[in-house]
Image (cartoon, rainbow, N blue to C red):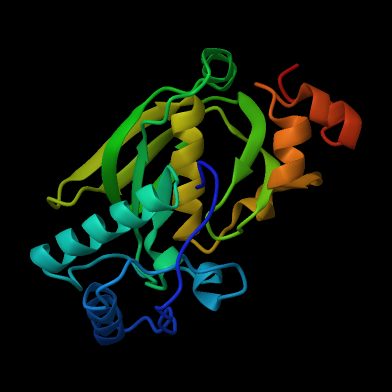
Length: 231
């Protein structure tokens, strides 16, 4: 998920083969490339397939190196989350971290609090309660675009941590949005699949017109979500 989007280009994402051997080979290629890889863009089939659950395809050292690489790519982009398919690796793995300084009014409206770094394997989430919120999102795999997405305000995440422990954590506000966005990635779902398409804006138009703390002005002017989802 973007904090706002960009990236690099002398590495070609591997084809999205899902055998253990193909994943090991793709990760080895990625780790030995000697450069930060570019982020795979929409249209690559790896973003549209169900990624393979992690079952030990990589040893602890390889997995740690891949997570470190993903974190560095995420920071460079910059973003608040990155899933392995976004580097061409069809594996259920994502990294998340949100430590950006945000305007206090924006943070309050969006329920945005710092999210310490963590990595998740084989994630699944379920809504907690019926409350939903809509805000603009971007994605590092859809450079230059933003759209409003209506999502559950709170979710329960089940995942496996890097040390192999199965964990369950609850998230709310912007943290819940990041968790949903990145978990969707490993299941072949992009935020545009859930977006209000009338809200779609390029980054320049979004910054100039719709970057208010909430989406009320954009809803009125662009004509999406005519019924307030929070009412």
